Length: 235
Ligand SMILES: [Zn+2]
Ligand SMILES: [Zn+2]
Image (cartoon, rainbow, N blue to C red; front, side, top):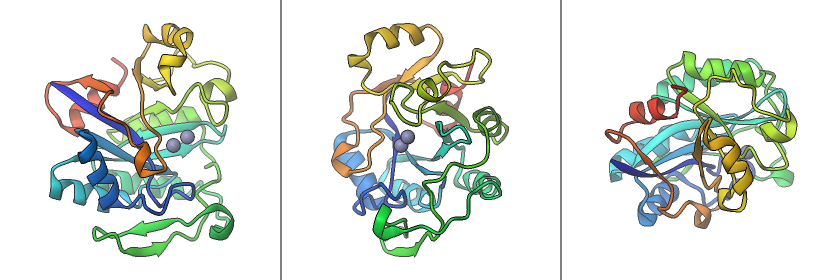
C-alpha cells in the first residue's frame, strides 16, 4: 500500500520548535494534510512522544516515537523506535552521555513537555541543543540493537549534516535510507545516492504550517511501525 509520510517533525519540546507544536496540534494538522504516518523527532529526547502517540491512537493517525540525535560529530541522525517504552529506554542511554547544561529558555526558546490534553507538564531544564557524547557509528548500532532504525538527517544541509561534517557517507554504515532536503533542487545529489539508499523527504517542521503535504510516499505491505522500520533498514 502507498503511505504518505513525514518522519521528521519537531514538537514544542525542541527549543527551536514553535510553542504551537503541541501533540494535538501536530496530529490534527497531519490528519488535515492527509498524512498516514508521522514521527515526532525532537532534539535528543522523546519526552513528547508518549502524548503524541496516545493522541494519534485516539484520532486514528499512526505516530512513530523518534528522536533527532545530535552526535559527537555534530551530525543529526533521526532514530525511529518500535514503541514508546523502547524510545524511553533509549533516552536513558542518551542521558548518560548528555551535557548537563541548564537550558536558557529566554535565549533559545522553551522546552515544553506536554500532556495528551496539550497542558504543560514540565519545562525540560537541561539544554537539548548540545551534542551528546556518542559517535554516529554507535548511534546507528544502538538504533538497530533496540529494534529501531536510523537515517542521517538532511544530508545536504550546510549544518549538522553527514556530508558537511564528515564529507561522505561511509559504505559500511547499517542504513537503508537517507533524508535529502529539497531533492527536486538537488538532482546531482539525488542521482548519487538513489542507487545506494532509499531517499526520504521529510519536513523537519518546527511550525505547524511546515508539516509535509501528502506528496512523499513509500510503499509497504501494511501500515505498521514494524513494516516502516523494516522498509527503512539496510537490506
Ligand atoms: Zn537537524
Ligand atoms: Zn530536525
